[in-house]
Every structure is written in C-alpha cells, then in structure tokens.
Image (cartoon, rainbow, N blue to C red; front, side, top):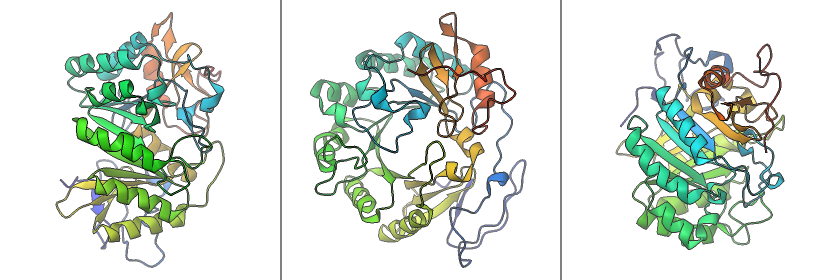
Length: 375
C-alpha cells in the first residue's frame, strides 16, 4: 500500500503542503540533483511533543551493551564500544517491564530490542517469556522487534527460543557474503556471512511466524552490498540498506556511492523508488506496491537531528539503571538517568522525550549537564 507521505522520485511532482509546512518540489530528473538531498536539514520539522514518544513511536531498548563482534563503525546505541563492557551488564526484566508500561502510556507503537547484541543478553529466556505477556497486555504496541547479527543464535537453544517467540519482527545484520570475509568485515572476529545465512537466516525463515529482514551496512563496496541484497531476495526477505554512520565527528565519504547503489538496485530488481518526505529516506516498491527495501542515508552527517527524533527513542543500561540517550552518535558521553529510587521516573522519562533528537548539544541549559555513566 502506498503511504501518503511517500513520493515517487522518477518524475517532477507538485508541492504538497503538510499540516505545518509546505515541502519543496522534488524533481529527480533535474541534472545533478541528489535524490537523497531533496530536503535541507532546516526544512525538516517535528510537531512539538509533550509526554508522547514522537515520530514513529518506537521505543528502542539496548538490553546489554555487550556484543560478540567488534565492528569498527559500531555506535552501540550511544554506549562505549561493546568490548569495553562486562558480560554481566544488562537491563533487568523488572526495569524493562516498568519502562514498557510507561512508554505504552505515552503512545509507543513499537518496541525494538537491540544491544550490543540481544543474543548476549543474560536474561534472554526470561525476555522471550515476557514478550508474550506484553503483547497481550499492550495491544496498542503492534510491533515487537529484535535486531541481531545472528551469530549468538547459532546456539540451538537460543535459536529455538527466538524462532518460537512472540516477536513480530526480527532484523539480522549481515554486511558481506564474500568468500574470505566475515559477515561483518569491519569486525576482526565472527563467522562468514554465508554461514549466517545457511545456519541461521534460512532455518529462521522456515520456523519463525513473524517478519524477517536483512540489515546491510554500506561502507563503499557496492558489489559486497548488492550480493547480500541478492541473497536476501532469493529467500524472499526484505532489506534495509544503511549508509555507514560516522560517530563522534568521524565522517565517511560514501554519499555519492550510496545514491548510485540505490539507483542500480532499483533497476536490477525493477523497483520503484519513492521518497518518504517525513524521514527524508527512499524506499523501493515492487510492482504490487509492496515496500521491499529501505535506504537509510547518513542523516547525522547532515545534522538532520529532527529525523533522529522521529526515528527512535533510545534507552540503554547505565551504572544507575536505565538511561535515555538523546544523541547516540555525536554526544555518546551524555545520557539522562531514568531511574529514581530504583524505579523508572515518569518525570525523567517525559524530560528525556522532550530532549530526544535535539542535537549534540542537547544538554545545554538543561538540568542534565552531568551524564549518567554507562557500564
């Protein structure tokens, strides 16, 4: 189904007013116009939010900062690199329950569990049981998702728990299936991508009742990314292609190559690209109007902070319990403690929602100029 905020980018289109602001005309046929740069950062707006999770309504929770890989470009949801954390670092099920209850009251439409990697979460089996109960208790939250590199779930017990879970969506990160490369080439440890597809993705596609997609990070090597996309499409899986994001001021020169990749993939699979104006991203649709691929540009490089605000509300585990990270890529040392006297504070949660996605200097002139230490 075509969403009203999506515009096809193969022909000139008229200006369409939003509720608050008119959006500029998109003419993809104009020479030298970049398809992913059609809205400047100062033309992207969120409606003011008071006590409600903004944008897509996604609560994104890092269960643990620990991961089995060591990817060089990892943002780790605003925490220190995964290999710097203790294996025991993890959110408790009780704290997660309190957080999800508070988020559901504030309009959360989706909950996504990340890490580190959720497969390293020490309370994984308790989490799987809790998700089944949460789905019944919070029907307004219609998406329960988990993002993993897949390798921890090569363990048969973990795989069985995941495959039989009440999750609605699972995303698997694989950046390469090239011979001689690991599934995440930027990590010095891991397993080959082909093995992850054969031993995890394929069996999961046969046993899991929900939706599976492949996340692939584009670091500039087009053939590598296209081969992952081809493998995923052979299994009938949707794909999200993410331009590698620079963390803490680091910049990658991948913008032009990313746009070229998008065009070539659209042509190879006979897909129609459409611009999602609200998120300034391009999605690819098949002949039946079904969205099968998403291309996420590096919004941070252009400081499209309001896009970040609309995408996710991120929560991690700190030394003092759960904490929100308003700017997870450029202000990683700054977070907002959500716990007071050992419980989730709704006052602090509302303050964190207000400050989410306000840019690297979000803490200026706020009571949160002192960070909550992450584990």
